[in-house]
Length: 191
Length: 157
Image (cartoon, rainbow over all chains, first blue to last red; front, top):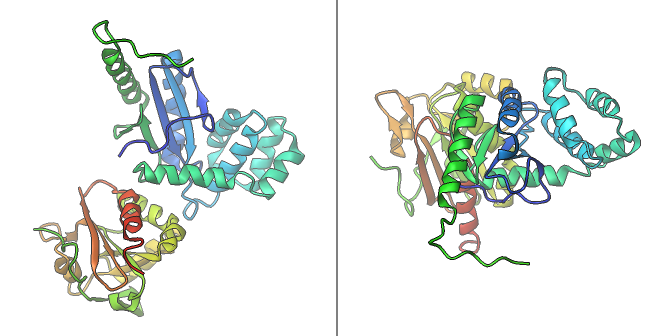
């Protein structure tokens, strides 16, 4: 089952839009495996540089991880103030002591407009976005967290940095091999 | 061995849902039932799979469906497992005679003494509408279930 919803402007994305390979993660902020993957991904992103694009989507298993959904909403609320990735990182770095109060403290630390942040949290302004991400995960065949998709196809390998980098480079090369080599007519470009 | 076929009536059973409560499949007549056979409590893949179905209870309810897990674990084992993981799904004990229901549905692995990781979607009249047997180590997710439920819409009710 491949990615049901392509990466678009509603996604939180790192890296250039025309990168040869796109990695999508469905993650849960309270999932210990996602936390481990987060630290590996730092290395993956640093190593791949502009050769990859990374998008993070929410898949909070809220019934078993009670702080996963509030954390996802907090990341979105920070995102509305241009601070999605710093909040995303801080949440994973402080996963072992997640609480509503901690999310507020992290917001303060990022210098957010706290009135706005609190209003967004209390009104669950971003809950529907989080749930949309969750359902797109399910529709894509994601069965747990973290789930990864490379150029839209499910990645079933290990999430350590070496394995991910190898898979990403392979996917980038596969795409390059399919690029026009002169014997195909160039596709007309939309203006 | 092939799992119980689509279009056949789902076999009736009566199993413990808790140490002191028994449940029959026919208790759910009039609702759709998603039967999720899984090999064992506590193994990490099952945990993930049940966590996902637990999360999707509202989504299943939109399709008038309830999801029920079944394994050969005992009722006290299920009780501890549900409590530790915070699951709200009912988990049935196919414990005595061991695996009898899994055998009825043709999804018992006699060598290992556990059931396959198998899914059955049963309609309001108790007829099997969709089945899937996953490789035992692989979490089958929920997209197949949701697609099956959607395709049933309009056909019944």
